[in-house]
Length: 315
Image 1 (tube, rainbow, N blue to C red):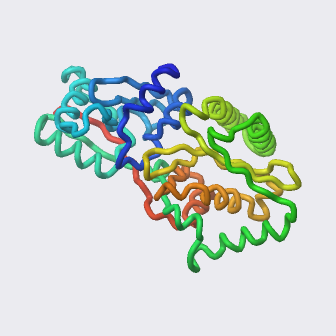
Image 2 (cartoon, rainbow, N blue to C red):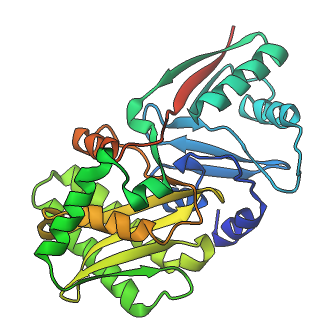
Image 3 (tube, one colour):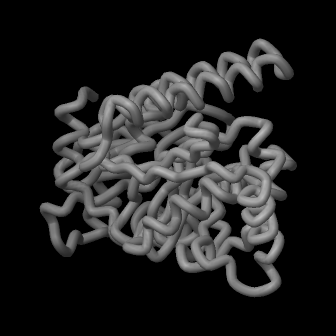
């Protein structure tokens, strides 16, 4: 799919009620090559197919189009089922990134309409999204988030001349573009000195995605922020919406010196202050990285959105 296809999808897809980061149009664009994502426009829905890992491989649950204000979901699921099974010529189909509710809905549909098919489900905790209340990340209430307040205070005590710049498509500038990529490049340089060649390739792929996002900020309504110390950019964040209620954080990077004094807590909190029009903030998965899991749990998520993978098999 090219940019014109994404422009069409931006106005036609119905994202209401969706929470998962895999539904974000920004993510579908940024990860289409790395995750080997195939997208097909059908009459009433978008078909997505992933080919990334053991648990992120196969067809996802369809996203409905706005054209049908009250879609007959059974009709959509029937068309979806017949397509992925090629009118039942295929008898072993991979499914992925289904939420609990989508899994139950599809199970019921299969039982009622194609009882000779069964689905074996599994889940990988590394794929689950961490979702927070925007108000919690902004206000850091109570004892449960006191440590985050302490980190922020430590940063402000350590760096006297620091500032934050929020941006979206309305105030995006060449300076923001240049400073954002400067942090991305410096952060990658820090990581490549202590990681394997294979991990270095992942960082470079991520850098390509960051630049691509900045080059298409208007189309996908990306927003973000930069944290400065002594007018030097030291941390960045970038996000786009999943739905009118849910914002997805795509990237968050902080250079090591500032990170040691609470830089991540500061860039997170300063950006979230500009996102009060969203109820929820999706900070995506932990990738099975223990340190990342602990960091995401430390912010006390409101929801951990489990994702399921399965095999659709004909008896």
